[in-house]
Image (cartoon, rainbow, N blue to C red; front, top):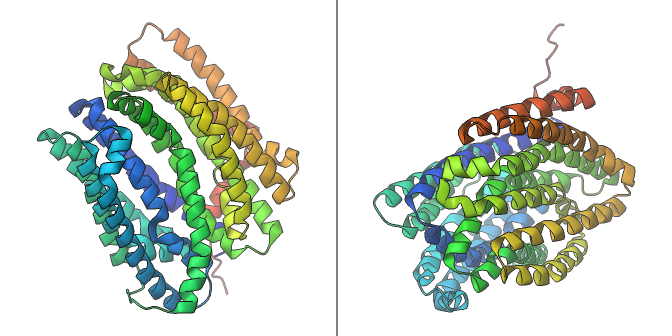
Length: 483
């Protein structure tokens, strides 16, 4: 199978796992939003700020290094497993000890036990890092479908049952831990490599030499992507953090997860062609085109339907989240379009480019969001949109120069999705105006249906060969068995 076709099929499987999993998470969120208070979601969000940083340091990047490293795969996997267990155990213990300090920073003492339980869950869940990395390295993404699906089922099921029994925020915490443990057990069951703890100083040095800079990049990236939650936690109460967390839930599930799921596929694919600049150039433009086609209608559509979406699915008590969700939908759209060029730099060993971009992002975003967090969660969402748009334009310019791309190449990649989304926006806006006297459920259903039809029709008219080209990469070719 060609690398392009293997990558396309891997992308379909990986996004399928994400889509089904996120649908289950969305359904559980709808139920939990009616069982729990905003404070409960806010406390979990604050506890996860610390755990997200911990997760980025996990194993000091040995999983990414294992994908990048092509020599002695079995021996390298044994060394990577040893390093991962030792490092993650030390990290989890450290967070358990400093949990009271983390709670003091946010001025919420009740998150101390939450952080400690999540730290234990972090260690258990990340025992899957090595088998998951080996599956990614082989581009065998169909084997990720069941673990990711099972994770979402267990996470949502445990949380809903415990919320029904009155456990409050702890239903969310234990759901998080149970889901991670379930996925870890299945990853080991589906991985063809059998675990063997071993140590080789030269291999360990090579793994950490590549993995440590990746971790630092990940850590900086997490800092940049969690500044909103961090500053809201520092300058507002748990209730506002809860409204913000719910507002971000759908943009994250529907839009940002597309880029995240594709990153799992793109990094190992780019790593295989790391020395062929022409293939990297072609692969990046194809990725940009399909990311735009997938995420543009989601971002624009969610912006339009947010008022009905919140009231129908979450109930009227979450109305303060509506305007925030609209802005975060636009932010998620711009971020998703430029979130995967980092895989090009990682695959080619040019981590210095990523360092500079992330540091510049932090320098621009931090003061804006700190100021906005002193006003309202809506101001924070607007700050994200403005700084995100500026940074996305900069990232496109840098990757264009890195891969010797013309501005016209980038416009051609983004053009079909932009034009089709404009048609969808105009048509759906007119329909929504005509349906202004209808109830929220009817407006929501008809808006989604009309938007999907308009976008699909416009895309077919603008670029009719797109669907055929996509199908040619995914659908198995017919074999001619004639003698």
